[in-house]
Length: 284
Length: 183
Image 1 (cartoon, rainbow over the protein chains, first blue to last red):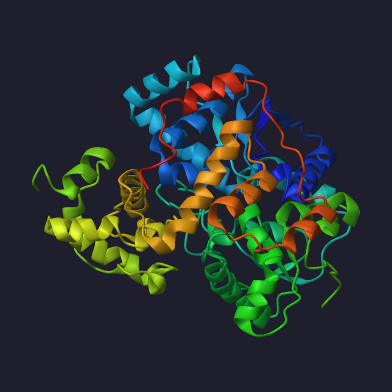
Image 2 (image 1 turned 45 degrees about the horizontal axis):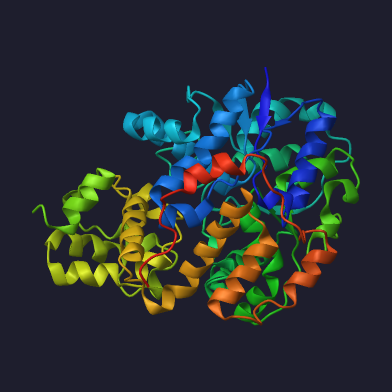
């Protein structure tokens, strides 16, 4: 089986460490992820807010390329890209006239049957069954697993996930040795794409999330979305000014947590790239 | 529902019948940005049901449609499973194409436009290019001046864009698509 890989733009820039840690984990597990050659941006929020056709045609080009390269599955680590690709697949299946229009523009045809996996689905299927043998240095601290929006919603699309109280990431963290705390902000929105254009809203929404995690004793927040990481980590000064207090809880990607538990170095997991320093030590 | 009504056009485009909303208010209760909105989601649904032309104009000129972050909480919790974010997308495109964007939402729209500009030129988002284009068009020149150098030093910001090979094929997707509105 050929497993395709769509990194998305963030993973080549501001969330480079998400890419590095995911590839490092896959390598240790002996799984080859084949990057779609010449992939393009999914259009993100900008396209679906301003232009409906682009919001479908941009992701569709990537699905068509993945089919050309005969990929059976497509791993999409960015939660926002994942949402756009899945929504596009849905739209193409429901609307033959839109599919025909876009195939014409792409000059490619689409079977539209590739299995798209977000990072949690990928980990559950390909990594979790082997964690017992792969974990070399178990984690020993309390973590708050933060899912945000697009890994769990809309639940009409994300049918397998418990959308008000998801547990996939919590169970993975427990398998790594960490204690996943119970907390109420797992699926609240961080402010997402307003990071630059409405920064004060991000300070407020992300501030409430970070405060809840800290007040319940978490030593790290675990995420699986570049946007969530950007807001909780790089926007920490805005968060601190909203909360009127200093908060030094680090934010790590689930793939970094797995890499560290597999015994890879901090450098290999890419934690040195964070704005909030990652110094995780035993807390129990 | 009259053919001239905004709700009729919403239904044509999205296949969502706003009359199915029975005003339970769960969308507004769960909306993370409701307190910043001029018209809250359940109110927008009620206004659409009314078919009142003045109310419809007010919706297209509202800040709310741009403050919606598409977190999908309303859709997931709606007892009628009405896809409100999809309605918001339709309303935003209309508002944008008709030059009715609320003044406090202009930075948001400028950001989206800058985003699509860099995607059109490179095929992929170039974060540095996005920030420069946004600063130029929004006039917020000094915003985040401290962020870029730190991102750069941590290897999170590339000076040069990554370009795809088939830019010609990509340009077919952008051809004839409105990126620039009336305003």
